[in-house]
Length: 344
Image (cartoon, rainbow, N blue to C red):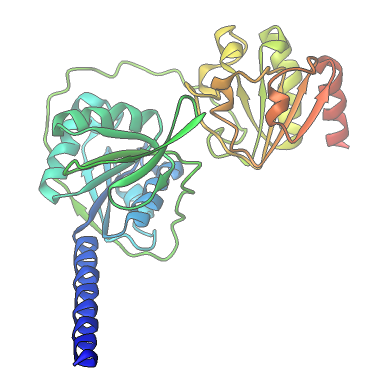
C-alpha cells in the first residue's frame, strides 16, 4: 500500500513539473520582441544592434524595426543578424531624422499591429527621445538604461548615477526598455536571413520641423564604440590647450576623443564628446582621463572600461580611486612626453 501511494505521488509530482515546464515554454513562445534600430542616410547604426542582443536574451520571436528615407540597405544589413525572424521597414522621408513627435506614433501603430510584448531600443539620444513618448501613448512605464535581463518581467538597471543597482519587475502588458550598449555588445551581421516586410505607416502629422544640424566631423574612431578613448577635463584650462594636448595623444594611440562635462561647459570640446551621466556611456578597452577630477557623474559614463588610466596633478583626486594606473603630475608636461613615447 505504501509503495503504491509513493508511486502515485511521484507520478503526480512528475506531471506537475511537466505542466509547469510546458506553461513556461508556451509563455516563452508567446514572447514577441520588437527591436528599434537606428539608421542615418541609409546606413545602419551598428551601436543600435545592441537592442538585438537584449531581445535575443529575452527569447521568443525577435523582429527589427527601421524607418526613414531609403532604408533598404540598412534593413538588408540588419537582416543578416542570426536569430532574427523579420525586419519591418517604413520607407518614408518624414521619419528620416527620427523626430519623436511623429516617430513615436508610427512605432505605437506597429507595436499594436504586431502584438509585441517587449519593445527595446539602445539607450542612445534617439532611444531616450522616442521611447518615453511611446510608453506614454501606450500608458505603460518605461524601463531606462537596462544593464541586465533576468527574465521577461525582471530587469536590472543602475540608479543614483550607478552607485546602486536596482532589480525591478514590470507587470505592464508591453514592456518598453532602453538598454545600455556597453552591457549588451552589439550583434554582428553574419549569415542571418530575416524576411524584410513593409510596416504600417501612420502618416502622422509632425508637430515639429527639422531645421538644420551642425555635425562635428572627425576621422577618429566613434566615441561610443571606440576601443580606446582619451578624455580631457577642466585641468586643460582652454580649448587651445585641449586641442594641443589631447588630439596628438589620441592620434598616437588611435583613440577617440572624449571630454568631461566641465570641459564641455567651459567650451573646450564639443558636447558630442561628453562622457558621463548626461553624456555618452563608454566601456573601451582603454580609457585615459587627463585633467579629470572624477566627479560621480563622469564616473557613471566610463567606470565599466576595461583599463582606466588617469593623469592628474592632485594625488587625492577621486579619479585615482577607480583608476588601474595613475600618474600624478603636470599634464602639460606628462601628456606630451607620453605622446612622444607612444609615437616611438
